[in-house]
Image (cartoon, rainbow, N blue to C red; front, top):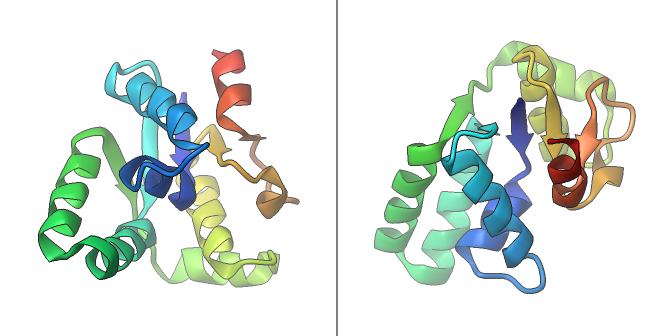
Length: 135
């Protein structure tokens, strides 16, 4: 199963954010074990780098990106993705870009901790617990 992982889940793990980090770690373990394929949008990388650099410094941000690339594939963000995101008019543009990456990239699902952010997306949208139950 190929799943796009929402930016917030990645940040939950990298920043050890309670109470979400344990679920995030379970998802990372499934991806690292090859039980599912994890994908992120290219914009996730820039967002994570920006947040981590401001909070923890450039070196930590660079190491985090390297860690992400060990386990996750990166979906391109191009004109088609941005136009799709704009056309769907989701409440959060960033979520629209992520959804567009998943749909255009023909992934199987999106995993997020707030499924309401991805209403009217043509793919299944799961919480981590729901995804694990599907396996």
